[in-house]
Length: 468
Ligand SMILES: *Cc1c(COP(=O)(O)O)cnc(C)c1O
Image (cartoon, rainbow, N blue to C red; front, side, top):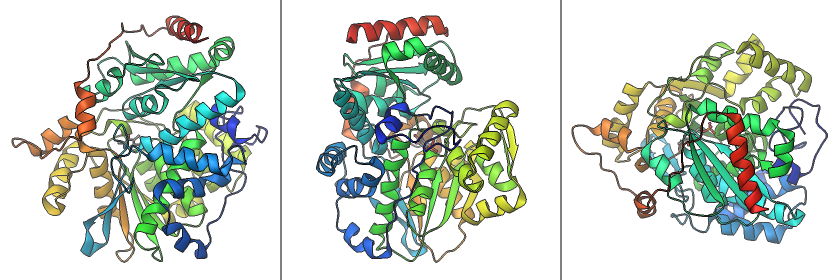
């Protein structure tokens, strides 16, 4: 079902391939599967892939047989470079502070944990329908490489990634432009990330192109990504021995990752607090402080994957805050789109604040935090993760409840931030061999695309034609 209530109920494959609901809303499950108090013991015995298959199977409405799905999950997480897939390590054991490492996938950010199974689900759904798709992605950082790694070599998929010329890091660029595969098409656009996103939107709005090229989206509003992210919150809880309650701190941009924690809570995970970390683009922190969701201009920071002023997944949580009233959700989102602002009443704000807290950390303090966390705990964390840890320490509501900080990327993805944090010394960076290898590949850099919908469409058409 859709948060805006004007789209018919659809099956899982349509949710997967469609992304956004036809009424402009976001898909949610019509009913939430529950994990009972008696289930934790059995779940604790499962491997990560087994847990993923078990926890998310009820969302598939029977569209994938359980045995096939178990195999798909095993395959999705097979090449992760840690046997636990999502290891939970101590940050400060005496204070009950932990770090959930979500950077052991092929491109070293948490986005692999969702996109690896989602790429496989896409391919399966398309092949069963005898269809092909052109997956269109605009990226400002980690999504592009994770989506490419999820789609590379898949027969039913072509993937087109647009990034803003000169506005992503060298590591992020090389992770994409070093992939040499016939179904991967990476192009720089002469413009900003917003321009790239506008090009993607204009292509989706073009019905004939949409049909001709079989356009599909894998961005973070896709429900299939959220469901896969629920798994590691449950896994962290099990790794702690299923305590009475648990808290998480999540560095947040689009509100997708922290919404998955909230979804785990709806399924029965006893989460008592969710701390949202922001950089200077602090729309969510201001919201949890004041109840006003109000956009400002995006400013570039050391944590570029959170340089966002519209958290598109927030609509899913808003739907709950508005007591499941889809008409009110639609009205509120419409106002936000038109005016760049909406306000929540006092009662609802206090309900939100009973679970959520927001905290912002500006660049200079991010550098201090990286250094201090390393000095105190021996752990090297990336700028996004440092923001989450600082937020956890500032906003933790109950010191007796274990606090799990989510590490969203490997520090080696952000060498410039790490260098700045340790200057004039060198950062103790340990680049994983697979990342070092990815960065050493020759780049294939195609001509820059003009920021012009007609040319972008022509480009996508030419790819679809070759593939057909
Ligand atoms: C994408 C990303 C985030 C933001 O996650 P959301 O789900 O958009 O809130 C945070 N950190 C890193 C490293 C990311 O790549």
